[in-house]
Length: 91
Image (cartoon, rainbow, N blue to C red):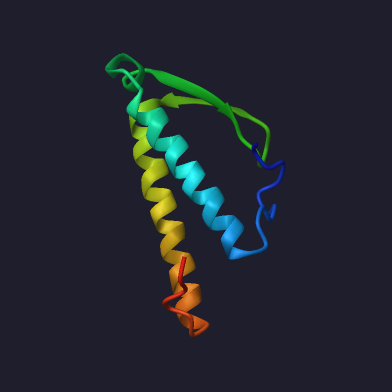
């Protein structure tokens, strides 16, 4: 399920977030692994959450962006935890 707002809190506790992240990672890996070369060279369309507009773009570069973007946010989360004195929070 996609949240209706960008500031939606999906999980208030780490254990639930961890399970959801693992399930989402598996879903993404399985989906990307099943894509054909033809699909990867194609386009896809989606509607933005922030301003409800339709965007169409090439799939392969978009997948690169998704991977890099989530890595960026995981780095931000690590920085916040480090600032708070919790650099090694067990998952």
